[in-house]
Length: 121
Image 1 (cartoon, rainbow, N blue to C red):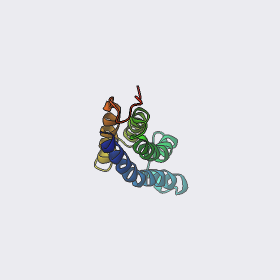
Image 2 (image 1 turned 90 degrees about the vertical axis):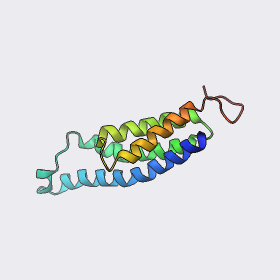
Image 3 (image 1 turned 60 degrees about the horizontal axis):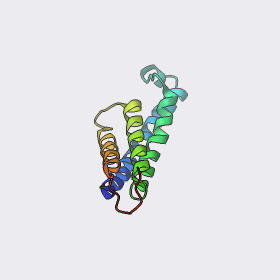
Image 4 (image 1 turned 120 degrees about the horizontal axis):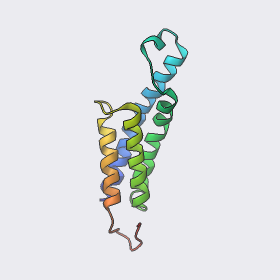
């Protein structure tokens, strides 16, 4: 389960990088081009930029930690999943990063009996 969590987290992070670049770019475009701000409106643009940067990082870091520290990695994956969902919503572009990060987080936390003798709970 730890290997699956690691792979799912890293894949979610890589896909999330592209969503984050798009989200950051759309907010930057709305801020810089007055004509674009007419049809690009955001409720909280700073949060979208924050989530665009932090969520992919948490997914990749959580996937990387899933083998050695499954609890910490699982929590990081679930926080990354929640940031993607809160910032961008669930749609055709975000369904796989949200799904992969959420499933990876659940699998990492569910690995209660670790492969090594040191428990994470």
